Amino acid sequence: MSISLNTCILILKEHHLLKSSAVQDTVRTRMEYVSYDSRDIETDTLFFCKGAGFRPTYLSMAKDNGANCYVAEQPYPEGKGMHALIVRDVSKAMSLLSAAFFRFPQDDLYVIGITGTKGKTSTAYFLKGMLDQVNGNRTALLSSVNNVVGQKPEDTFKSSLTTPESLDLFRDMRNAVDNGMTHLVMEVSSQAYKRNRVFGLTYDLGFFLNISPDHIGPNEHPNFADYLHCKLQLLVNARKCIINAQTDHFNEIYAAATTTTSPDSIYLFADEKFHNPELKETIDFRYSTEQLDLIQTKFQVLCVSEKARKLQIAGDYCLKMLGDFNESNGTAAVIGAGLAGMSHADAAKGIANVTVPGRMQTEITKDHGVVVVDYAHNEASMMALMGFMQREFDNPKIIVVLGAPGDKGLSRRPGFSKSLNAYADKAFLTTDDPGFEDPLAICQEIDAGIDHSKVDVTIELDRQKAIHDAISMSRTGDVVLICGKGEDPFQKIRGVNTPYASDTVVAQQIINELEGQNEHFR
Image 1 (cartoon, rainbow, N blue to C red):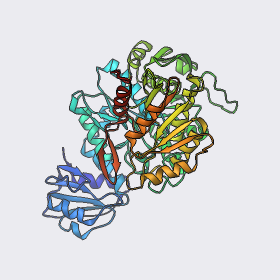
Image 2: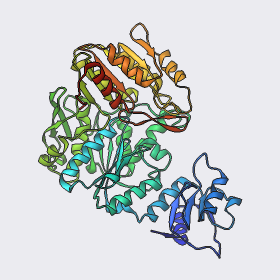
Image 3: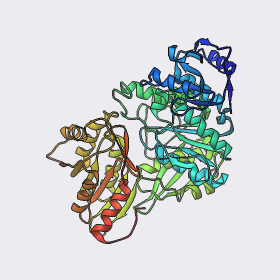
């Protein structure tokens, strides 16, 4: 693959991004590689000077390693002798030029984007499972857990960002197309729009699951309004929209969808008991609980409106994952499958055996209650998880292990305090990707908001020991919730991904040690 300098200039001019250009007569005008990392350069590379941490020395390194053109928001003396494209926004330029370099792979995929404060990953996995049922396992996936760009083992790999940087995104999409994939299901984070990682991308289907305060802090969103604005951009850039009618800020969300999408292509869903007299729009799909236990979640999807009945998806569905909150995620995924052309029979078969790594992985122990490993990592997901456990097990003693990441999501910490006050009996505050912050200070910040007359708190920075102590103290009838990391195999500490066995592995080892059994989380 390659791209010419002239093509780059035309694309940037078309989008009113080009401020100036410097073309060198003696330098090759075709770029054979693209990169934003000065350590990843090949001969004739188009290099993007991006990021708050960019240093001119990176451009010098890229030039020395073979880059022949750079894109930046200002000219740099270090780029003398290279072609220079000076732009108004380098992140937008990188997205547009990367899409062109990789020959617009989105045009060869049915692209589905999912956003929401919680439930993105589960919904993405449910939808992939259903689509795989009818397309021969040719559904690519970009999620906060794993990325899948093909059917070979090496085509599945751990993700580093919920939504990759634009250059990596379009490279992954090109690999998926070249590997014969026909559909792409991807989580779209608020940061994806904040950082222009998906700038210029249009989705065949766009999902809005829910919204609550999250990712608000110095390195993320300055306030909730900015967070919501970024989330809404997915709907603005989707051909068909699927919206949870029970979400907060529904009117703003629906209005955003209608700016670019006809109401005939906007689909609303809610549970059968939901009623909002102020809601003017028709709810197209309803769902209801049929059966709920630790083995499976069985629910029914009803097609209510005329346009909903055109989809052949009404009927019963089963999930291997417990939790009434997964019925909403499952319903969203079922609607997406129907809009992609699937029938009830195929969709029900495809979703029935889906498991999501690190989500609601459960083991009923002999003497230490029910142990659940879940990725719950904000107030909304914690409230949903603990609320379900309280209802399902008739007010059990709830023991929680959790921490908060450093350098981001500062708004989560008071949210954790609030959720623990609402449901927990015992909390072990521990380390969870502290980054460059002091993990003890993070735990103390959460602890400061906890009502100690309701919740007994232990700060234990050794996460493995915290999990051990939580399971050890639990008894039959108790519930132990190990939250935040799921199957993440590392802790992010001072810029280094430090190996960590994962919550699932650690918990399983402790249960086996305490009870001498060899069962596994399901």
